[in-house]
Length: 265
Image 1 (cartoon, one colour):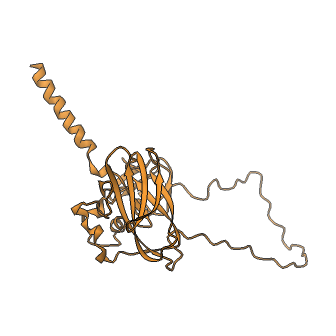
Image 2 (spheres, one colour):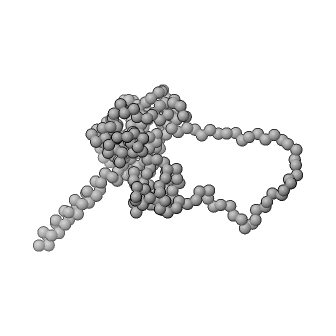
Image 3 (cartoon, rainbow, N blue to C red):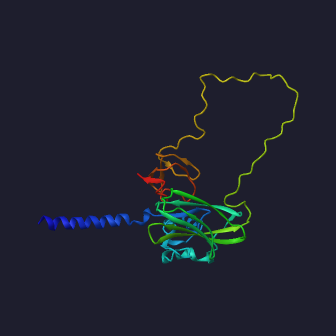
């Protein structure tokens, strides 16, 4: 009798475990900037995208494809060039930033324009960080281009696909403009004048502020452009999340999409 009870329980546990690890909501990764088509859908910049709006990280298919939707019918909108996807102005070099919600061991990262591979980065099977950046040269190309970014997984036959629309040489300085350095103003020499009021002296007990940025208030609403530290707690879409890795947030890194950065609590 004991065997007839134990084996079904083990079977149920095994099935439950397989369902848990198969949960697509915990996967996988996408290009956040310049915004990929799925990132634009997730941010609501492009409307009527269907389910990709809620899972921009899940465009996964067999290696070797050249499609934006990885051959998945539910994400067919990503291959629809007639949607007039917004193109990000860039220069002849651009940095692609990935957000990974599951850090799969990686073989290579590839970037294509048409059938031409313009860049490849070899990770040699290593596990990447939660965010990954690649600087890619676009020399020799101009105007509007669709760039296919591919993340090849090391221990499976699959890859993740993103299409990023850019305007090379467009106005606005590109998605990753180089900060302009301003020379300090030249001071004209002038006769020295005795001060009419003595400058206040700092008391020995006076301490400068410890930090230029106040700590995030626990339970505050998540916001882009905020520096979060490990342990910070925010609310988003009615749920509470705790920061897992220190970072400065940007749009498309909302807690619901970046479980590598935020832990539901």
